[in-house]
Image (tube, rainbow, N blue to C red; front, side):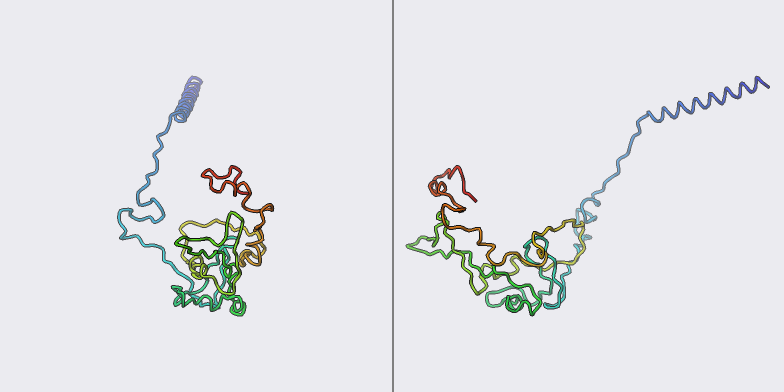
Amino acid sequence: MKAMGKITIGLVTAALLMVGCVSESAKSTPQNIVAKTVTEESLGLRNTDIYTEDATVAAKTEYRTAQATTSTKIQRAFQDAPPMIPHDTVGMLPIKTEDNRCVTCHMPEIAGAMGATPIPVSHFTDFRPKAKLVNGEVVNPVDNYKNETKIVKESELQYARFNCTQCHAPQSQGNLPVENTFEAVYNSKDGASKSSWDEDKYTKSLNTVIGGPSFITEDDMANKNSKAGSLGGSAH
């Protein structure tokens, strides 16, 4: 019996040793990892056959349908961003010289009563010097190299700003295929809803007297006809 017991213990010990060796061998043997197959249909965001457009349907664009004066304003995307159009624009486009429906509600004197965003002062300011044609040559009425400016506040909406949809557009309510994680940072407390381009902000940095904090220096003027220009550059 003692002999049989010793034999049994020996066999068990040998079996355990063999299992341990096999386990260690399995660990040390490199495994062939099969890469996941990427199909052409899964490329991109549309998940359809890239060789045909038959089954591809674009996301539906849904603009707001609320009528003007009843819509909710859209928060600006960033400081002084052109406000989005939050209402239906059917019958308002295209904007023409003799037909601009936007000014019906957005002129400053009536915007408050209409619950609309007032057109800012900058849109009533002429930043464009009126060039003249003299003896077949275009003559600029101001000399930029003397820091001359011609910025005139007018009472009428400037034609450079007349085409409202040049900057302002309605916002689609469709679902985004990729989440937008952009977070706006405003440098004014009401920057999400109001423009800071009011009063004299756009002119307070101008100084037309050379010797002061002007944009063009004496060196710039002395080298204005040089192809290389001034080494110092402007003081802008």
